Image (tube, rainbow over all chains, first blue to last red; front, side, top):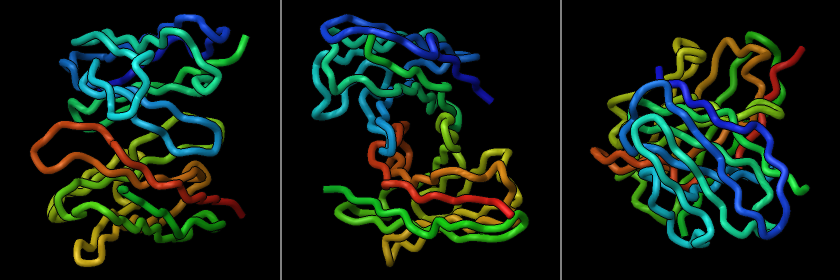
Length: 106
Length: 121
């Protein structure tokens, strides 16, 4: 099974900041990586697929990069609506999620 | 707009059974794999099970293999999860999610609102 590890687990930032969340896979997953945003009491929302491709309607401040085992999600110019929990997911071999990164207001 | 509605969650005793349903609309259901993902209270997301477009192929997480059965009714645009021998650690919100079309690698692009399963005596 492929294990996904995110860092940090919690991130404190202010509106307007640029933040980076990292996701590491236990083995190469090529670019078969997605990022989701989840708000309390809501279902996850797909933001990024194939490591760097934005889902339709996702603001351009969200961007993804990486391949193999190391990936990043960057949010440039944080907006109040962006404070949420973010998960990475590999879909190269079955499916598995990272443990999540909670983005909090500083 | 694609719509998934989860239902069937309830309070059930350890060792009991429960059947979850997911009603799909506004897309060609039979063209997509479908999946159940769960989230224990205060915890992260865990993939539970997936089913192929025809229903011929099913996949399970080790934590539920042998106890849960995923199925679908393409004529009725419905997805199901039959859960047996439930344990306290199965307590979670269960989401159905749309997977990729057959033969394509893609994540879960639409999700239901979730249904809560609580396993407790």
